[in-house]
Length: 121
Image (cartoon, rainbow, N blue to C red):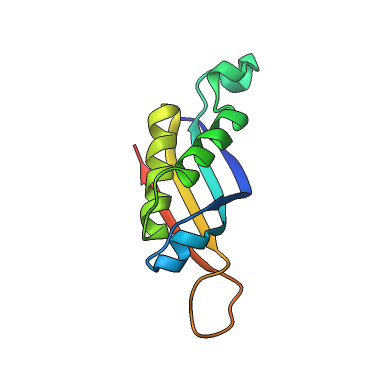
């Protein structure tokens, strides 16, 4: 099976995920990377967007999941994104989703908290 990889890097969304009530009330930015291994099929030869994963549609789907229902864990959010992408685009054989939370409520200084989840068909 021939595959190729599509990467959507640093997609930014405002949402209200987290364990603490303040996180759900105030909200914050979340950043998502999607690394999608796609079964090539005929897409590379035919040059038809209908035979691949449309970046715009994939971004919109990620946005809908991130800005939809609240989750306590970014791990759960990442898995939901991966499952939604695989359900919508049957060509995806593996989705690796990274979610970054720059305003993680920790007692200390950090750039962000990050989790990466993989989902395979």
